[in-house]
Image 1: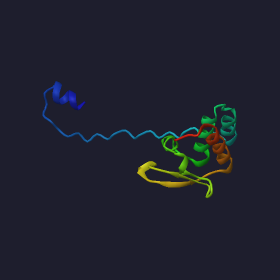
Image 2 (image 1 turned 60 degrees about the vertical axis):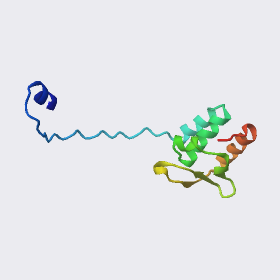
Image 3 (image 1 turned 120 degrees about the vertical axis):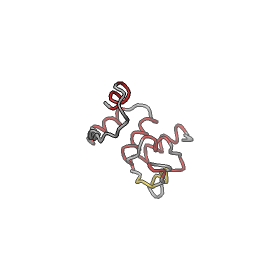
Image 4 (image 1 turned 135 degrees about the vertical axis):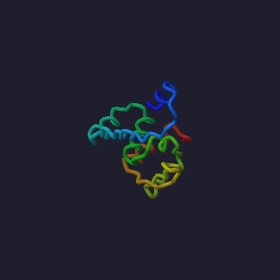
Length: 114
């Protein structure tokens, strides 16, 4: 509208107090515990299975999980150190026993650097 009045019709430049429409907020779809367990169980690749387990059990974001290194997993204290998460902040999250077992199997087999 502003472009039409100012450029097309050649009117003077004015300020128009037009309210912006409210941003739509949609809740995400959430998987049940059974659905997540089934998804992890049906995954054949050990790396993908471990990644899914870490994402779900620790509540990590995808980018946080991708940045993980083997020395970020503290099996003695059952913690995962997340470096540079949201807001560039570091934090510790709980490590589930089942996820640690899966991680140990993956680490023995693949010897990952990241």
